Amino acid sequence: MRDAVNARMHVALNRPAVEYSRGIFGHFIEHFHRQIHGGLFDPGSPLSDERGFRTDVIEALQEMRPEVVRWPGGCFVSAYHWLDGIGPDRVPSYDKAWRVEDPNTFGTDEFVEWCRAVGTTPYICTNGGTGTAEEMSDWVEYCNLPESGRWARRRTANGHPEPHAVPYWSIGNENYGHWEMGAKGAEEWARLVTEAAKMMRRVDPTISLLAAARADLDWTLPLLRSAGQYLDYVSIHGYWDDLQDEDEPSDYLTCVSRSLQPEAAIRRVEDVIGAAGLDGRVAIAFDEWNLRGWHHPWGSSPEAIGARDRNDENSTYTMADAVFSAGFLNSCLRHADTVRMANLAPMVNARGPLYVHPDGLVRRTTFHVMSMYATMLPPEIADCSIVADTLAHGGTDVPVVDGIAACDAERSRVVLVLVNRHPEQPMSCAVELGDGPLTGSHPGTVLAGDDPDAYNSVAAPRRVEPKKETITFEDGVTWLPPHSITFCEVSSHTAPAVATGEWSVGARGGWRRNA
Ligand code: AHR
Image (cartoon, rainbow, N blue to C red):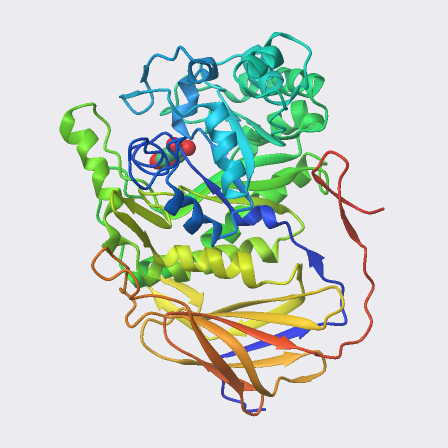
C-alpha cells in the first residue's frame, strides 16, 4: 500500500458491529410558513388528491424512505391545542409562536393519514408550554386507545374507528428557551415531564417517550433523575449556521469547518445520560437538526413574516449542505448505540430537502444525501477507524476525509461511505477491509456536483444528482472527488465469524444493551 495518502480507513470486520436504528433517517414537519399549508397539503391544487395531499410530494418523499416524521412543532406546538385540529367544526387559531393564523384544517387525523400515505411512522410532539399533562395524555387516548373513553369515541365519530397507533410521543419542545411559549425552569420541567409521562404511559404503556432536553447538565440531569424511569429518549436539537436574524448563509468552508460540532454535542449528552446512571436505558433523539437554522426575524409585521420566504431560496442549499449532512449522519452512525433517532428539520420547504412550488418540486442536495443513506446502507455499522489529513479554516481543523462502513449480519455485503470535504482537490484514501487492502473495482454512487456551491433550482433541478460510478482501488487506494460523498458497495467479501446478538430493541420500543 502507498505511504503518502490523505486518509486511511480500517474496517475491522472480525469485531462486533452495531445494528443502527433507522430512526436516524427521520424528518420533522412544522406548521411554519409553507411546510404544510401550500407545501405537502394544498387542497384545490391540481396536484393534490381528494384529501388535499400533494401526491407528487408524497411520491418524492418516498424516495428518501423517511422512517419517522415528527409533527406539529417545533415552537408552534408550545401553544397548540390539538382539540382545535380535529372534527368537523374547526375554526382558525392565532398561532402565538409564529404570529400568524393557522387554519386548523391539517390536524391529527390528517397528519396520521398523510404518514400512512407516505409509508412513514408518525411521531407527535406535545404542548409542554401552555399545555397540561392531562391534555397530553388525552391526545394519546384520542390516537391510541381502541374504544374506551371519550377521546377514542371522538376519534371513531370523526371517521377513524381503528386506533391511529402512534408509537412515538415527546413531551415539549425546547422548553428551556425564552423564545418558547410557556418556557420552564429545570425543576419545573422535571416535574411536568414526570407527571405527563406517567399519565401518557397509563393510557398506552407501549409508547416510546421522549422529552425536551439539551446538552447541558443543569437542565437535563434533574429531568433524567425525576423522569428517567419513564423516558426512552432525550430530545436534543442542533442548527450550525445560525440565520435567524440575518439570512446570510455561510460559505462552503465555514460550513464544513463545523462538521465536528454535532458529534461533540452527542458526546456531551452521552455524558449527561451516564451521570444520571441511565447508560443503555435512555437514548438520544436529535429530533431537529439541519446545517442551516431557519430565518425568522422576530416581529409580526408583514415584512418580518414575508422574510420567511428567504428560507425557500434554493441557491442556499449547496454541496456544503450535502457534505455537512453526510458528516452529521456519520456521527450518528458512529454513535449508533446511543443515537436512535434524528429528524432533519424541516422535511418540505424552508430549509428542507424538498422544495415544493405550485407546479412541481426541486430535490435539493440534502434530498440526495438522505435518500442515499436511507436506501443504500446495510443494517449494521462495522467497527471502523479512520485517520486523515486535516482541512484548516477559520482556526478550526477538521479531517478532510470522513468515513463509516456498514455491513449485513453475515458480512457478505459491506458499504463504505467516504466523504471528501475538500472544496477543490481530490483526496486519496487507503482502505483496509479485514486483514488486507481493498482491491479491485466496485459499484458505487457518488454525489459531488460540479462546484462546491452547486445547487438545484426550478431552472436547473438536476444539476446535483447522485451518479452511478465504478470505484477502483489500486494498491488499496482510491481517489475521492472534491466536495463529494461516495458510497462504495463491496460484495461477496469473505469475513471471519463474529459474535452477534449483543444489541437488541427494548420491550418499550426503546433500546437495551443485552446483559
Ligand atoms: O427555527 C425553527 C425552530 O427551531 C423550531 O420551531 C424550534 O423547535 C427550533 O428552535
